[in-house]
Figure 1 (tube, rainbow over the protein chains, first blue to last red):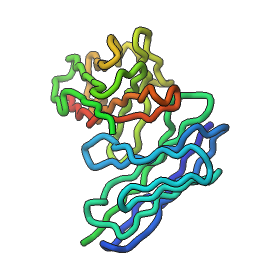
Figure 2: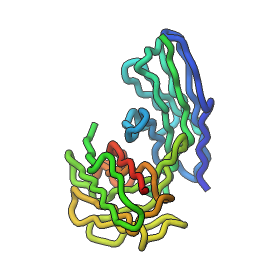
Figure 3: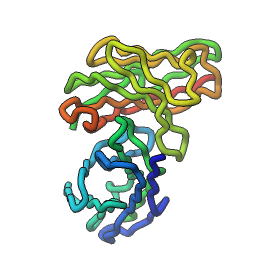
Length: 110
Length: 118
């Protein structure tokens, strides 16, 4: 059974304080790892898709990386508007459904 | 990114009534859409996979007679909560899979529908 574990559950940063969120996964065959951002009361917003170990993608202050066991979402010099819950999800070879982690709630204080 | 809309964004109904939620893919034709349910401070729980022109596939524990799904066109899927009860109150979110990635294409999510059953 696919498993996705995100850590930490919650993270508080000061504006400008860089950090990383972790997503570790166990799947029989990875077909894609997805990062989403979710604001309270809204649906998830797509950020990145990573397909193979060693792949990296960047968008503004965010950078996602992937290994064979985990993915990191690096946040560089975060701003208060980066506050949200960040969700990681995986899709395995045999299916089309996404398996989500529980998310990391990020708060960036000014 | 692609746009997926949901309507209504919020609905309050009386116990025993039925509620229909619409999910539209605005930027691409989605042969596959998904319906999720999310409880406060929890992650998304997949309810069913909706395939255009065929019956939906429901996850274990989800009552198909309770949550009716219709995917009548390549841009519209509907979820009807029949005979709603207070325990059905939740945040319902749909997603549409970008067909350019085949079975492993990116899923784009709608803004969600907040259902409150009194």
